Amino acid sequence: MKTIIRQKVRNEKGMTLIELLAVIVILAIIALIAIPAISNIISNSKSKAILSDAAIIIKAAKIAVADGHCTIQNKNNLKCFKEDLEQYVEQTNHKLGEKDLVRRDYVPEENKDIYSINFSEFDNLNDKYSDLLKDASVSGGDDIDEATEEEIATAMQGKKVDPNKP
Image (cartoon, rainbow, N blue to C red; front, side):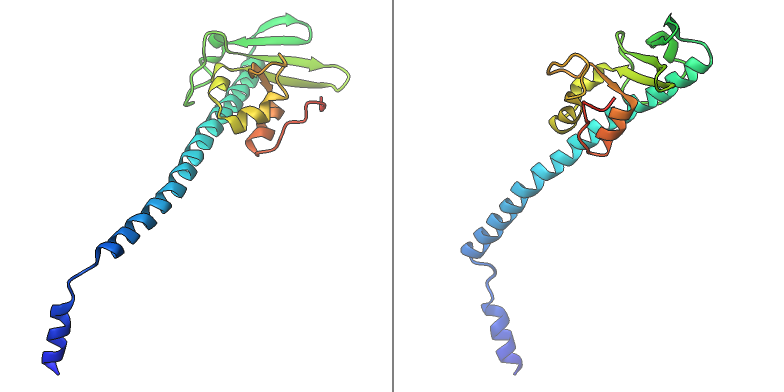
């Protein structure tokens, strides 16, 4: 009995070339599927980080407005420039650019403040999140120049922004 088992073990030479090629093809197919999926996840994460930073900057602007550190444009409008916001924005992945600003517009009819941000990092959004904000772009062009706090929150949820909604 032992000799039969020893002969069987000795006859096992390993994998054939065809079996080896089949394994390599299967691994290649898995890699072709996994690599784009992983890169999409990374790209979406980077875009969400940009939107999250924009939301954080708007929250910081609200504190700056409450502290009186923003520039009054007229009785209904304020602008918070980079210099106004630097002491309120501590930890974000994306820093404020020279032309970045947060604007507060008071809408008397609705008795509410609408905060919007001009953020240079919006240029680095991937296509998915860029398209979610594009319809709401103030300039109406292909570039996203400005987004409101509500538009950013809606885009972060993966929903399309309604351009007809005030």
